[in-house]
Amino acid sequence: MPENDTADDAKRAAHRALVERILTGDGRASAEQRKRAFDDEGLVPPVSTLLGRITRTPVRIDEADLAVAGCSEDEVFELVICAAVGHSTRLYEAGLAALAEAITEEAPGHAS
Amino acid sequence: MRPDILNHGYRPGTKLMFAMIRLFSGQPLPDAAKLTFYRSDFYGNPAKEFTHEALRGPSDWSVGDRELMAAYVAKLNQSAFCIGAHTATASLAYQDGPRVTAILDDPESASIDEPLRATLRLLAKLIRDGRVDADDVREVLAAGVSPQQVKDALAVCAAFNTTSRLADAFGFELLSPKGYEAGAKYLLKRGYR
Image (cartoon, rainbow over the protein chains, first blue to last red):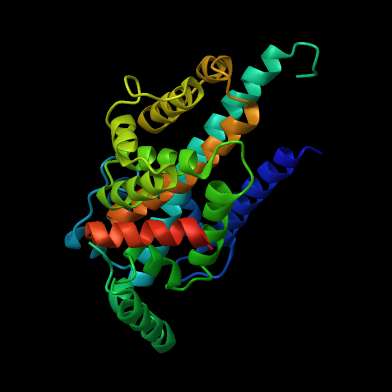
């Protein structure tokens, strides 16, 4: 395997390890909540209001946003991280999918 | 605005380390680094590993190129802390601050190799639209970028899209020019682990 293919595996593996840890490892927020934050779907206000701001640009959060009813600071910490990593993961996967399609169509002899 | 746990929630040994760094370096530990010490098993440790692989792992992009991409992603996300940190790091890596500033201001008109310009264009579209298609990637490949370099750039984008959003969500304090310069030296010497 060329060196850079191995390097790519290391980058993807490190990213997958991060995603797996924040979604399935121990946490103060439930795994279900963390998955919903990561996917940016299925959450209800006020948590959805807070996390919706993470995926907008520029990100703007104030004290009132953090005073989310029913969430401890540790839960907010985890859910904000899940929302940010989830958003980035969707970008990463969208880019890789576009690359895979571009490469496949440039090499018609390859199985698709 | 940051949760109070990110101001005061660290273990005594970690607080002592923060104090020692401030004493010996003359600079406070940046909030980006502090964040990775809070319950480091949850986010800090795996995030540092991914960021280090993306920015310092093997790649046909130079470290300066990847730090420039990080600064550009931060600029697209309007994240002041990350713009400052990675503009300083890219400038130090290239030994050319004015060039980095010119590229971040307008990569289309700046003096820059076409493969890097095309890659920054791809990252801009990905950040702004949330998607790119095969035609967008074909333009990058046609500019002389290898598929592996596209993958490497996407990894940088993923790492710094996360960091720049967390920087603003958790209200990372901006540094002085000396603070950014000290951080840049550290990142070029030690990386992100």
